[in-house]
Image (cartoon, rainbow, N blue to C red; front, side):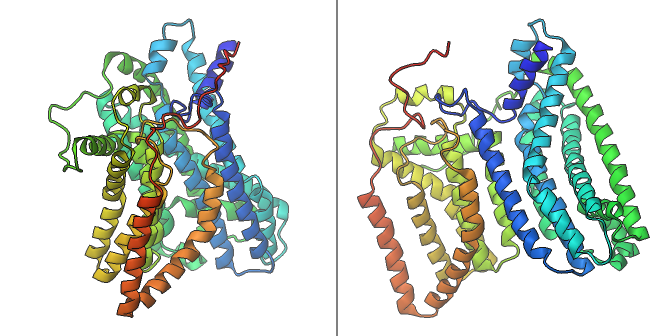
Length: 523
């Protein structure tokens, strides 16, 4: 039992990679988990506010079903993101094989600790997301439903359906991952990033692009059955209504039966794939290399200035291209931005994707690829702050601003609007690099400093209003040549002012938090 407890704690805190944490915080990974839990609780608080508005008066059936479907989709999206972010830690890695296999640890303890850690983290994720909304929303739905409905049945339906929907999606992802793990070790690692990005894109596409079937006639129509067979949110919406008893029909009963059937299949498939993968993965890790280097050279990249700037820019681009975790984090931002942009006009979509892409690449720069390898940069004479900042700036422009501007021009955005978009992107890049004294992917990360939940709250409420005002201002500026020239001049002056009066420091930052003068041995 002592082995199980130790392994359970280790696996639980390794669901997210803690090697990138600052040296002063690496032993306290709970700060990082607390930050994500605070963000989920904040989302639950936002859901409560929406529930108070929704439950003020009786609502039509379509509105109630839409609210139920959105709640189910939100839970499935969060669980899906959790499953993709913990992809690397689902199965044992090479470190587990090299350290734990020689020790007198029973295989069943290792397997049980891994399963318990995954189940605990999944349960805590769903609980944090619905900690406040799990009581307010069932009461609001019961009050909005017509007829005499027992609110306790809505509470029971909420806490049965939403965890079941999350469990279905997690088991489906685990089953796909388990099947992919049967491939040779190198192949599995190579396709993992594509599976992660593809799965996240599928989540976003289903949520934002799925058809709307919010009437009994639509759910019963024969031409809609093929689409409903591939839309899990509707299955669990049917299960929710079957438990509450508020709306009873053959179509609801069929959806409920489909939800329970597919949930059972997903659990059995995930369990079988998980056990089979564990039986074969340990031997594969010990016998096969992770990824064999290719015989061809890396991708060709253009020069970015002198030798030092070119080397630093090439290192940054290739590090981002080779790191599965960084590509997945960037895909999260881009997928969310592209999905939301499909519901806005072209100019507003371009502005939103521009902001999201700059934010995603800038966040990726702050997280190291291999923190222990930064000694190579520390022994090199890289003390030119302006030259280093120029290389990082050009890399950020190439990775974030240039693709958005080119895509907007190809999509039909007017040339004068593309110019304003490019200048705004350059200005945002300059603002994002104020005080940035790091080499991308080489500095440690300090949890809690970035205040993810606060940034999420600000972006959730402020960014849409800013973009609406920006689109209106752009249309007003483009209509007058004098205003347009003045806007271009103001953006150029702002960029030049930031570069001149806010120069980067000469000293490179290697740790997010400076080490203490007194070293604590932790005895």
